[in-house]
Length: 417
Image (cartoon, rainbow, N blue to C red; front, top):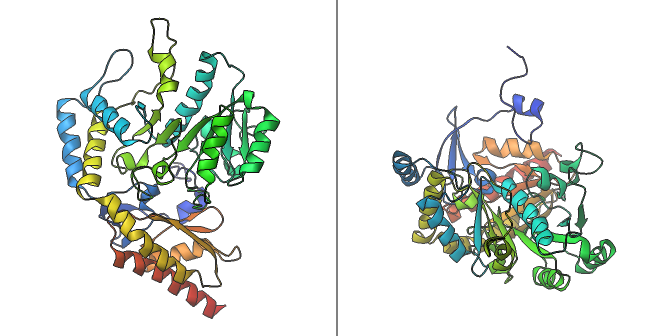
């Protein structure tokens, strides 16, 4: 047998993973338990996804019930299933796009690829085939499929796959600079640009909320230049900022919204793209309408859609979005106390998501391992930043205690130093 192991961890430096593997065995609410019995407060909510918390038997029962009737059937051609139809109706009503059409995928990276392909196909269909360039922002993360890799605002995710990216017709604009963004648009030529993809709140790139007026200005700018605006709400969708979608919090209506993660709270893999009527109509109206030749075997998987419906029921029944709004100032206060540490470069938060950026000379990995020993699970994201976005069921006491534990560890490092 090979000495290098059988499991290849995604997006991971494998020698480090092999030395420091953490086997998660079970979960309950905002907590997970390792195979060796250690209980950890799950500050990252898995990978930003465990919105309703772990261990919800109700979702397991829903999945079993659906599977016992029909595990799934594909949606190619004229085929459909009732769970897929019902969830499409529900998401169309929830998203801040009037009369949206829903295209189901298997996850966030799939959703980004779908939105980018549709943007280019749409312009070709309406007689502007030169519009192929996809813009994105510096520090943006949009998954790791072909388009997601190519539009990544994190250069290390593009490195090693060609001269610059897998798909060359891409360009980056600054994170919050509308003037420079318009300069780049004019330099490329608006007539060559299909879409601009934006995370309302930058996630993996370090948790950066938008500056005041930025998203509204970006919406106006893209409309003026006939560029489609794609809101990447894979992380922020389904309550993370206190609104069902972050676009609602900042009052914008994009042309497409990509989503995943919180739609099932990670209980099963599902993604979707919400599409404005003016984009969908050329493909829906008339016997000579073109096909959007794109699809996935598990688009609208019946069991996954049934679980998503139950997940949305829990969000509503337990008023978990209201809970996020109530916990937002609790998290902000705890972080403000932490910000006084000389080992903290910056803290940023909105809703129930935050980044604690450590000074560059501090070994962030050491901090992650140390706070794990005290019962707090976090991880490093870009720029030596600790990832904080707990399940919505976390208590105020659990949240403040976890942030305080991080602070106490930083104090101990200061004393040693």
